[in-house]
Amino acid sequence: GHFYYGPSHPMKPHRIKMAHHLILSYGLYRKMECYRSHPASPNEMSAFHSEDYINFLSKVTPDNLRGYGNQLQKFNVGEYTDCPMFDGLYEFTQLYTGASLDGAVKLNRGDCDVAINWSGGLHHAKKSEASGFCYINDIVLAILELLKVHSRVLYIDIDVHHGDGVEEAFYCTDRVMTFSLHKYGDFFPGTGHIKDTGAKEGTGFSVNAPLTSGMTDAAYERIFKPVMDKIMEVFRPGAIVLQCGADSLTGDRLGCFNLSLKGHAECVRYTKSFNIPTLVLGGGGYTIRNVARCWAYETSVLLDTELPNEIPYNDYFEYYAPDFKLHLIPEQRENMNTDASLESVRVDLLTQLIQLKGAPSVQMAEVPPDFELIKEDANAEKERKSTKENR
Picture 1: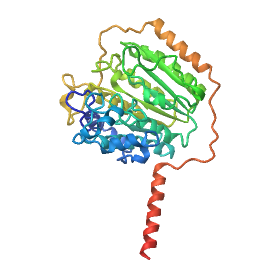
Picture 2: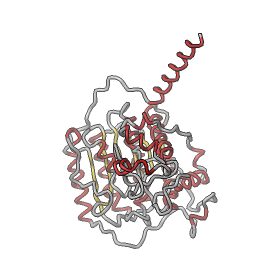
Picture 3: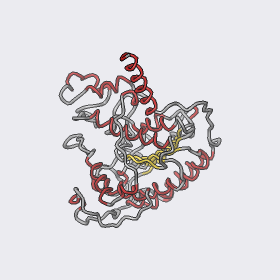
Picture 4: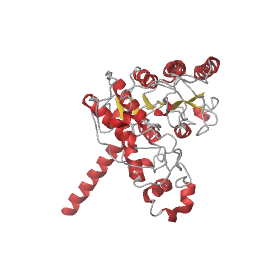
């Protein structure tokens, strides 16, 4: 939460600190097991990202920028991009990525049913470039970890922006289904057309719900629930990754949807109702007081705990002025999504899913070791060597 993208940048990691304090002051931490995650290593990150890109991120700083002119352009980082170079950038990526990987490992080992990392969910990062405020794609890395144990993983994205980095990474495989509901048309990143359904073995496994401004709770639910029901029926995932970008809420600085906390969190509640191991991540969200409200409330939904609407006193209490209430009232504005346009999206997606030939099966002879076991083996090897040398 103490990392800073710069004075005029809309992405504020401070929102994670605010969400953390709200979760603490509501007492929700008492109902969870809380862990300090490990910082992801370059080796872990290179399961998806190219080594030269990770190497660049680990070496570049605001002070030595000038020596990296060509690479800044190549990797889409720096002054004239939406992904600035700032103090501690590489450490920031290691922390949010390590937490998503730790969550995936906990789920793989059966240590928990739901793992939460509100600092993760950076869905735009590509194999060799930063994009849309995202540098390392923790989601892709967490899904790769889950695929070591589960033959099929479902990725759900309720951010206002299309989850392009995750869709692109798994576009040609039937082992990961991606389901994204997003604003489409003259809006970043410009991808996520309803006819973008995957390629090769992955044909039909990318599910896109392109929407327009003003989405309400009822309209969102009308797409989300029937499509989710059909996905669960035909794909039968062993694990779910849910990206909860809060920029789809009403009043977001960059978003244009009109969801309340309850409408946004209904997707979380509904996903949880299937009782499948789930990794819950953050994502976008640029009106930071509402991001903190959203993720604290969604933590309570995952814990089946009612929260009072009065925000309890905490270190960032003044941010919640003037009403100091948890819930948001949607704006009085028109929903540009008509009944006909919503019905068309719903029918197209259900038709796409019906055409799939049932859940793909995977021959899994041996589960690859998770990164914690690899680390333990390496440490044991070191100890053996030092014991030999001491003799």
